[in-house]
Amino acid sequence: MKKTLIIFLSSVIGLIFSAWLFRTIYNKIELRKEIAVTYKLNDQEKMIIRDGDIILRYGHGLVSDYIVNIFNEKYTISHCGIISKEDNNMSVIHSESSSFLSEEGIQRQDFDDFVDAGHINSVIIVRYNKCKSEELSRITKRANIYLKKKIPFDYSFNPDDTTVMFCSEIIWNIFLDEFNTDIFSFSLDEPDFNQFKNFWDTAYFNIILNHQTRQSN
Image 1 (tube, rainbow, N blue to C red):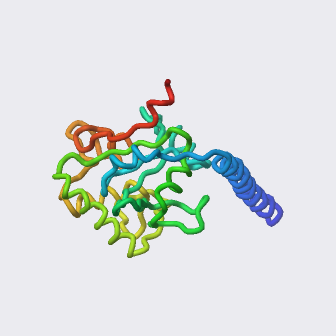
Image 2: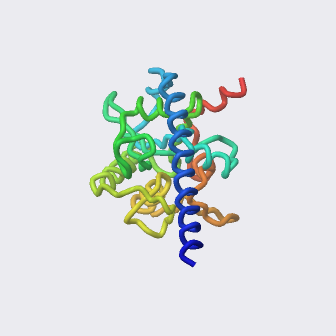
Image 3: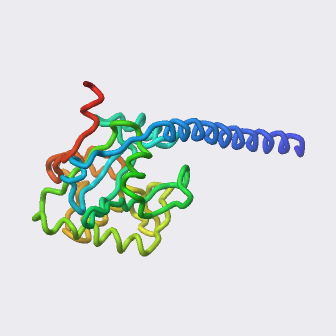
């Protein structure tokens, strides 16, 4: 009995270690790819961005690749955040796991760094179309409230638990708070809090910039 238990526990530990090793090696390879190439928006593109716009991108790493493959959406997106723009200074408020970054959960990141962390030509920027342009800044102000709370990343991806949050969950809650609008609610579909297709549905958003259209050119 003891021998069987030891063999079982050894097998479990071996599987866990193998999974950890695979993920570590995979992410290191992806990190090298990320560092090897610089990706940024030009000044003309940055000019059209407004405070409160939503940025989407396809990041590097095992989790990002899994999200893209399992969702299989029109655009290859694995992550999103809220753009904060004051004068010419831009940053992104978002919630991310600690795969590549030194901290996890809701955080502020330099805009260029956020873009550069994505695959080339993967960025899409959208704008909420159910409010006046001067009200868009309410999105960023509410995002800053969540930022100050230092809410950890939601590894279980459970939208019912607001003590931890994943990237699109923050945005969903912001629109509920500020505009009493459920951006993931559609008349013909069940809400899907994980997929990103909601952000290019014209029911709530307009695409302002789409680099993914370059990929087919």
